[in-house]
Length: 110
Ligand SMILES: [Zn+2]
Image 1 (tube, rainbow, N blue to C red):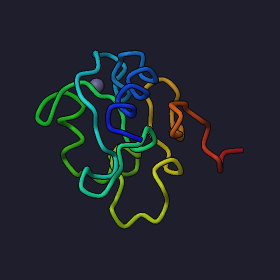
Image 2 (cartoon, rainbow, N blue to C red):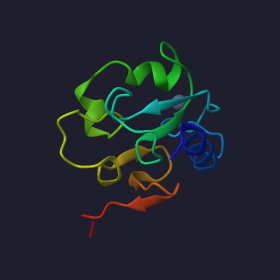
Image 3 (cartoon, rainbow, N blue to C red):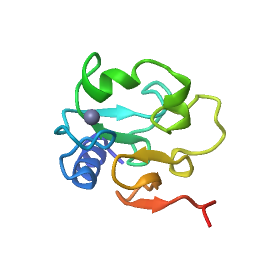
């Protein structure tokens, strides 16, 4: 999948609203698994407000433990693929992101 295709799918999924706070318009795309190691795939990319220093995108550039717990960041050594790691979404809670642009309930949830 190209970066351009991925951006289009993620933009549609977000409906133009930041996928972390749900309060601000989307201003940038964030790699959950860092750009160096992670693909441009909808499971790995989320649409956020802000940029590298401001808004939610600015927040997640701080590598705090909580952000890994929330699935907003993914450790490079995590053996799971991004679609298997729940992402804490402002509206849907902990959901898995697939590569088609949909949200799913966690596979391990009852
Ligand atoms: Zn936000």
